[in-house]
Image (tube, rainbow, N blue to C red; front, side, top):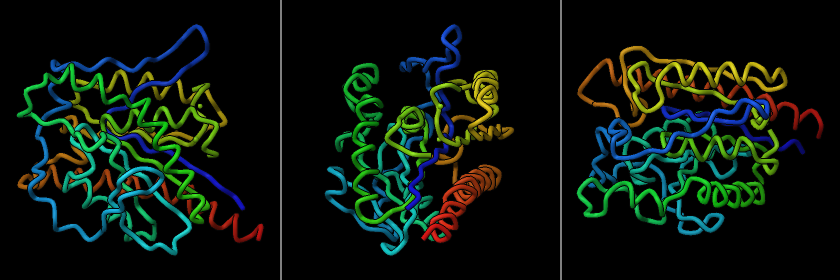
Length: 269
């Protein structure tokens, strides 16, 4: 059976190793990176989604949508505001319509960032490591494969894109490595993103292009800022249209690899 994984990094692309003498590194976020905290979701609006909450999937609570008979799963890693964000769950519902089982795990220990919290962002982030979340996501992916998933894709938003990049360097997933990224990787960025500006994305693209074995796709959306794909203004037609385009690009990337490997699996069987 062919088992595979690939990554889509949305909105906050960061990093990966190049040759030993040249390395892109993940920038350290502080409260000064305000774009990462712009337009926070209204978590009180949760309840209109079509999926269900699973309390233990690979040791994690998760929002799950899609057919359990599917052999292809997509894991969506959230930004700082967590897996309850209504627009993120809406994206999960829409991606599931393409025939995938979609999982949005709670990688923040039930403790998403809250703009009204007394704890400073700089202190909160110290206890919410994307590296730790990566290890939890590996266990989740293993659990999905035990349930019969032959291929798993991973998409990440902002903080969740860090998780996706860490996963892209893992030998435990079979399909994404620059020299460490080992799986096909797509990056959807924003022209007006101060946290991960276009020059940084182009650096990453150049690094990925040096690795001829790994397919990559980098796209920068004009006229939008950080969070455009999952924290857009629903009253702004341009913002809604751009977010929809990003979602379609993500699905196209997943279809290119996950469904291709479904055909290979059927052929080999």
